[in-house]
Image (tube, rainbow, N blue to C red; front, side, top):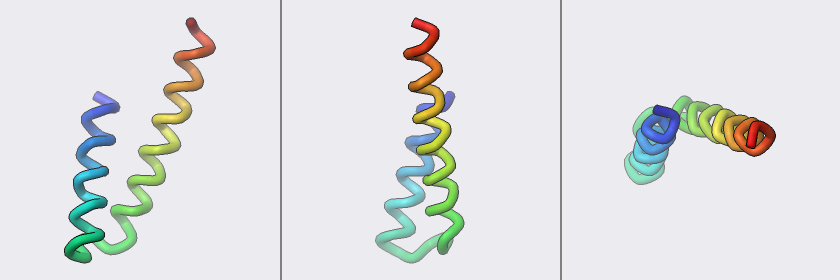
Length: 48
């Protein structure tokens, strides 16, 4: 599920760069998704 959200946000970010769609909100969501991804990766390594 997390990977799906990240892929969707990356696609929206690329569309935002190419067509100025969504303004800065897409960039903020992308940063939030990157933070969540890093936290998930760090927690996964600790549990293993």
